[in-house]
Image 1: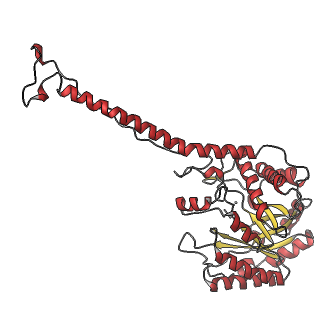
Image 2: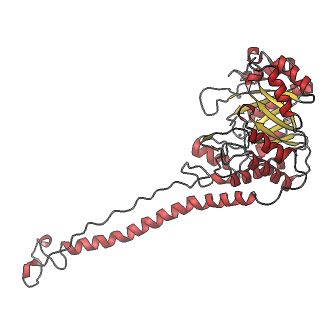
Image 3: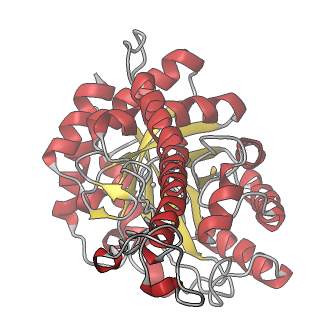
Length: 411
């Protein structure tokens, strides 16, 4: 689970130097050094006269060494001025788009969300592996039920993987899942338990899951059948890094949906963020070999093949709450525009606190994300019923995260 990458976002434009889009672009400009011309001497009191033949270097006056040095120094000054102008132009080329994008995101965070843009009872939360491997006990279920009661959470994505690189899934990975599902259905009626399955794709490294292999896709389909037979209410896939336009992934989703539909189980996926500017994933991929974003068109193709799609709208590289909130508002609008009404659309909330490249904890906050979600929903499709938020992740959440979710979204 990445939340871009980011992301990413309009703010990444102008980041050709590899700087974070939320920070000032790094640039350098070499400056030509001082000229080293030498002033001439006066010839020791003798009356001025023409230079001795072949001895210009030892005499002063016109044509002597001092005159040549001054001329060379003068010729270098325009070059120094040109160098400074070029350096300034490069700085402006890098900084102006960055500053413009940050201003646009900040403006996107202004205004008031529409009335009624609150939970529709279709929210979700990602849960760690401890719930299905025997580490959690009855008391933990009681606490979880108390926490979820009265919220809008309907789906639990409980980590039951990861998949092996060949697409298989050992049953030992979810050995205590039966206990967990029975307890949830007993203590929290109406809440669905989905198996969260994922793996690293071999898209940017030699090792990982290879979706281009038909035998790998077939193994994933078999693993899904096994998961549903074990009693899970649905299956939620998170495969990363998944590049925009990957047709093998779409082929896999078609096959998976036939299986889940036959058993009346939801097929859910975690999705990358959408290009904040058209074609931005291509630019970023060329720059970093990690495209991170999906085109809006590809996002729509994925959304049409599943029952539920959750945008990982965190790890955005934003440095301020206001620009992060504006970015989430933009992502919400972009996703709403291409997600069919028959598919649940969920926007991710950052229930974790890390400081690293791509994620700044003081910027990517739950209050900013909730406000951004509400603004995007208000501007694009405020009455959409199949809409919610997804909380990532239970084991890193604080009381402050839960309160911000409840006060800002659940009320």
